Amino acid sequence: MARPAERGQFEARRRKEQVAFLVVKFLRVYLSFREIAGEFHARSAAGTLPSAGLCGKVTALAQGLGFDLKELAHSLFRNGQQAPGARMNREALASMKTTLERRFLDSSIGTGYHLLQILQEALYQIERYSPELKLETTEIERIMELSRPVARRRSRSDDAADLDSLQVLDEISAKLAVDAAELAHGVVRRCEDLLEATARVIRRFGASANENEILILNLLQNRDLVERVYGDGSAETILSELCSGKGFRGRTGIERAVGYVRERCGNVSGLEPAAAS
Image 1 (tube, rainbow, N blue to C red):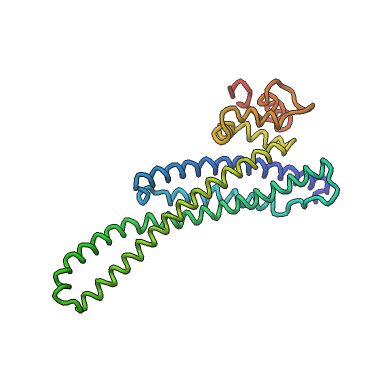
Image 2: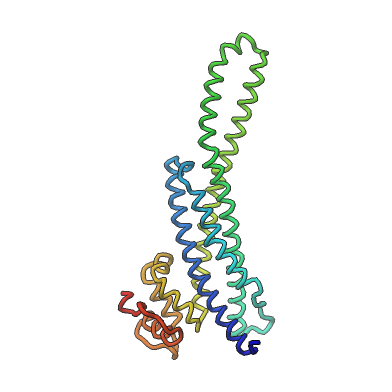
């Protein structure tokens, strides 16, 4: 049976790993959705959204990285710290900041996952039924045109009732198609806004996760993701913030990060600053 101290060390390391994996998975989700959103807007403008095949991409994202990210967030943040009481010193303010970040990340990541599911259904409706609706509308218009001479001769014919029903069904189907398109556009915009807000909080949350050698190692290994999400030079800036203080040696943030994880993690081949430049 593991001793309490050993269990504590294991849990502390496990939490470090979860924080690191959460940050990297979020970066991947962010970039994946940004690619989907870019194609969505381009296809919408071109009028080719029904043939874009985006439903499959959203489904893969929701069932893969999106689900993993949501589960990680719930595991990390559902039993978070409570906000401090009346005595507000520097430590208490830092604790409150962490609590609010945890609560926001759990909520925003969970919301983002469910929005992906809504978007998946809206895109399915668009891709599955919009092409058929166009064909049906064209056919109904052709039938209505052919039936006009007959309708003038027999205004109360049985055919007239059937034609009216077809027209009503066509209008309802058209309304559903419009609703699906509007829903998809709204959800994409909501996801974009939510991802940007979450990226800002993840950035601050990661910077406050000091002495997490596993997070630092993962950021070093995924500098390209960091730069694509936060911009050129952001990896150096973030690692400089994480690797500051007496325990770090080196001129740049990347140098200090490599030295730190080499001491704490062992094998860091290929992460030297020279290879990163």
